[in-house]
Image (cartoon, rainbow over all chains, first blue to last red; front, side, top):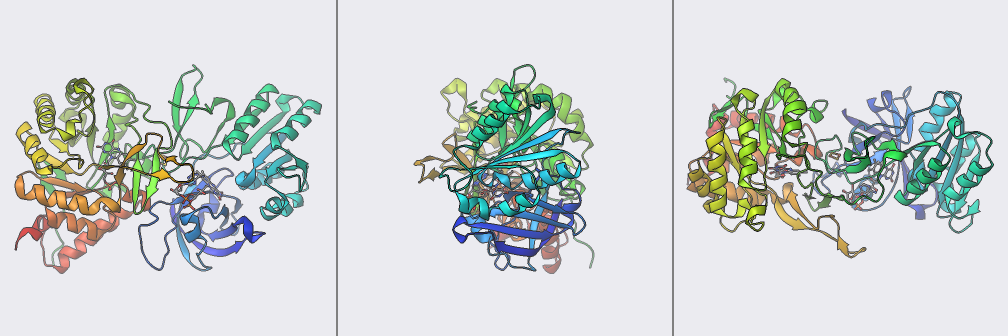
Length: 275
Length: 306
Ligand SMILES: Cc1cc2nc3c(=O)[nH]c(=O)nc-3n(C[C@H](O)[C@H](O)[C@H](O)COP(=O)(O)OP(=O)(O)OC[C@H]3O[C@@H](n4cnc5c(N)ncnc54)[C@H](O)[C@@H]3O)c2cc1C
Ligand SMILES: Cc1cc2nc3c(=O)[nH]c(=O)nc-3n(C[C@H](O)[C@H](O)[C@H](O)COP(=O)(O)O)c2cc1C
Ligand code: FES
């Protein structure tokens, strides 16, 4: 769907040094959106038309309120495009394509383990909400740079969900020192729940998702991963965003992150592809 | 005032209007169905196909540049057999004209593809992408050597009954020479232009952004080059031209038509806004009305009077 989203809220999230923004858009996308899907948002300054930057920016849907017709996007100002996006004012209308791609799936019952690295946390929040609404047990493993980051990127709203949180930071300023996957591993070792009762979903840096996938594989836990790639069309037409998967027959195939993903089964992803 | 006549006919190709979409930017048509009413388009050009399936280049395949896009997809496509089996039946059902785009790495590749694609396939025409290295001749690009270009087009022309459109590469010093060569080969029409070879280096990582190092530049950044080439070729060669390269607004499209394009094609512009083709059509129509032109065709080459 190509829509116009009206900016309802656009604010800084937490510490300004984290350069995080929260953008709430009113429009019909909320009605059909699922956790793990994303939008392609135009980042042109609406007051002066310009083709620089040219392309839309892919941003995950971090909150869905179908009753209010609102979606929330959480993003980090990374470069020129997000810098320009950050200038959009309340009441302004932004051109948004979405909901795009295929999101996470939910098991019928059992436990859902979420593993997030950095701002990979954003698409996992609506997933946790749907899982809880469905009566699943949810726990979060989340690793970030430091305390300031975790607090800025929404720690309090995760606390409000009342689920077990396993936090880690690189500098030890909050939670354990070290990598997020180490915490998941400790718990898997101790856990009485067998792999069959647990499902996992992960989003974050590629190396972290790869480590998480390998870890869960050892415990026979199936895991869904959310991949990122540079996008052109965002609808499956340009083949700019492919990832490499291995199919059941062991053959390497390409799939489009924008259309077939961004969420894939961890076991099928070829992480160090060079074909 | 009577409505402007939008229908366009050239080289045995009949279109309801002169707005097309570019090969490689519009998949096999289905991808954009939810975003743009295809029945409103003059036609679409399909992703380039090769005889065998290709996985293409590693990622990153895309890099954004000022008002432009570098791509190095590497001609990823399902191959001829899969195209005929799984894609063509769906393409035939699309509510608009479809032009196939073929690529090869030898003369034989092109012949094989062209032989398989005839009028009874339901396609409106065959666009021949000659911007590929000829692996049998030391990798010299078909599209940069007039002799090879002429040979490819003649070989294709000999085995298909579809109208043949030669798609020229702008990476040459003499575009007119190339246009003349494919005219000699028997081309029915020309597509101008394919992407311009470029590159982008990440200064933090100190290495090229694209996995393939080089990529083809498209988007508004290349438009002036494309308009110049359409202008020159229009003056020198008597073949209908499909103009493309950075068209994103109706003004751009009008500019191409004034330079000599009979039809225009939109590529990267669809990524910016999938409704761009419709906005362009409306804009051209309004422009013609205001100028008292009865048909869009009256615009073609108008800027050459003087
Ligand atoms: C499916 C998906 C979901 C995403 N969700 C979020 C999110 O919820 N929050 C968030 O902060 N960021 C998210 N990103 C990353 C976000 O798209 C980039 O940070 C953003 O495009 C950067 O644009 P820029 O112009 O500010 O940066 P620049 O670095 O100047 O961008 C230059 C070019 O590179 C591309 N690019 C840069 N970084 C990335 C990246 N990591 N992934 C893909 N393309 C990139 C841009 O789109 C642009 O074309 C997501 C990316 C994808 C693919
Ligand atoms: C992602 C991408 C893929 C392309 N693939 C093809 C292709 O397979 N065959 C071809 O002839 N041209 C291909 N092109 C070139 C376009 O058809 C067109 O000539 C060029 O992009 C200029 O138009 P534009 O600036 O409107 O995009 C591709 C362009 C892009 C951006
Ligand atoms: S971005 Fe074009 S196919 Fe995914």
